[in-house]
Length: 263
Image 1 (cartoon, helix red, strand yellow):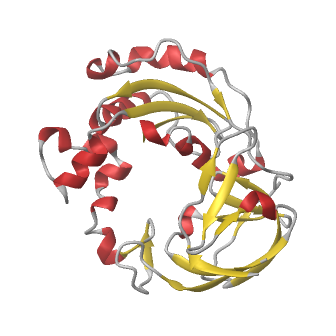
Image 2 (cartoon, rainbow, N blue to C red):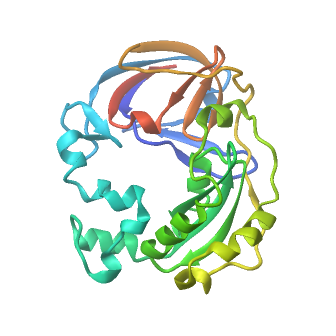
């Protein structure tokens, strides 16, 4: 069977083992069902996720002009502390920014390659943790808007990491941590504006990824430089496909590429 579509981040469903789904337009591929099977993935063309034109992807699935114009790529996306919708101040599209920013947000700790702090909308729990390849995570505060989450993250990342080492995450070179202790230890650094939203009593969430074999030396597949790749899928973690020859492919980092997949 041959499937063709524009890459978007895989959808997930948490359970005893996380289920992954790749949207290929008219078809959905359950990636778990492709484990231990050979398939071929080929680059076809570009398709910007905003204008849908065949233009080279710049960042986050957008062509360069769309990246600097669409409200989906405002600076506050990557830097929540820059959010201003709560002040009624527009960045690119105030209605959109209010819709996204003025809703409950979670500041969390996740352990993927190390303990890190992050921000996500409440409705994105546990999806955000799955996307990062975290095998355990815990909420620290639940605040009513993105700005408060952002300033909390900025304060906490002075005392804990805010980045994931993707190689270490994929190698599963990770130690279990007591995230309840981490949460309690970091409470003293939460800004005064957000301290009332601190979550006193909660437990870790544990996540189980469908991986039969972790790579010892993961090497990243670049579909632009290597337009066709064939391999046996042995795992999915975060937004990465893991192949038997230790090749890994970051689906989310390749959003906006139209690919064909032959199974």
